[in-house]
Image (tube, helix red, strand yellow):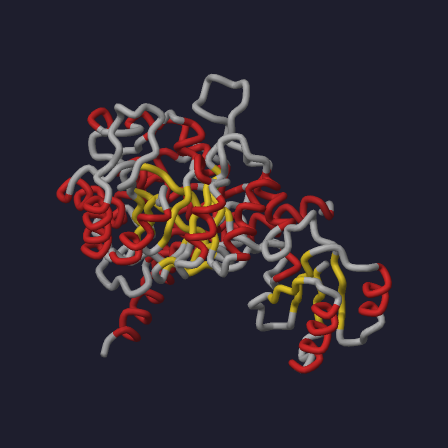
Length: 81
Length: 347
């Protein structure tokens, strides 16, 4: 792999991670679930025109939701008196 | 000249240098920086004295400032190169690693109206409520603002939704009203950027100041205006780029984003961008706001109205609440993409 490509991928990874952190921060302490989440991911898939495989998208968002929910639960519990 | 001492230099060492400089008739200013002592020397330092100071082991660096920009100079603080210092506006950190969104009506148009906008602003995740009570208008027949009553309504609205407030002060004689009503941040507007009497008076108020760039001010002149504030005792200054006059007529002003990375090099003072006054056209504000954060702005300030067509001032550049929500969301993404994060909102 070319060094420039490797560097670009690392920068993109940093941005992806920063956005995941922002998503987690938004959900800090929010214990209530999102009933429209499944439909929202389906909508994302329907609008998606890029090369990332659809199956992968579902898996990525499932993982994001699972980890964000865990973080939200932990921060919510921590905030309890 | 800016003298940066080695970290851990004992106070008596700093004082000895200070006294030496003052014996030469030079004015010495001190940075509030805690990580290391930093002094700035106003006036021309004799070459022999400079040589003598360079030989002192406790002085780690001697940095020539840009002109006489001393207290605003980056060398006066220890903030990392890509970051500004932090200013606390009623609990909201402006600068550093976080990005903020300031929003609200151009003019406070009444108690219910400002409260309604404040609710939208808070719901959208913005961090500071803005609103004009004293309005500098080009035409004497245009709405001039509700004055002190407007300040009261703005502050009440801010308190109701849990947001600090910023409002423009045009006359030093109104300062008491701004303080009495707990306005968290005093805005000095573009037209008053070089009103030195006002700058000196506001500097003594011990409140954060949002200093807008003058309509035709160079970046250097703008920083000198900020220097007035610092010199007067105000160390909580935020700069606000709001567009400058150029030959371009398609927009109200020309948004000067080129100044953002330069200011970051020259100064530690945080800088936000007001794309609304630059553009004067609501629909082009979102991309300008995105570009501002991407170029390193510490935040954006925009105007919001529930019915822009009915706004008493600057309706064409007012955003609807749903458009503000988009600005906040974009700011979050741009902040993350540039290694920062959106200030944690009160929601």
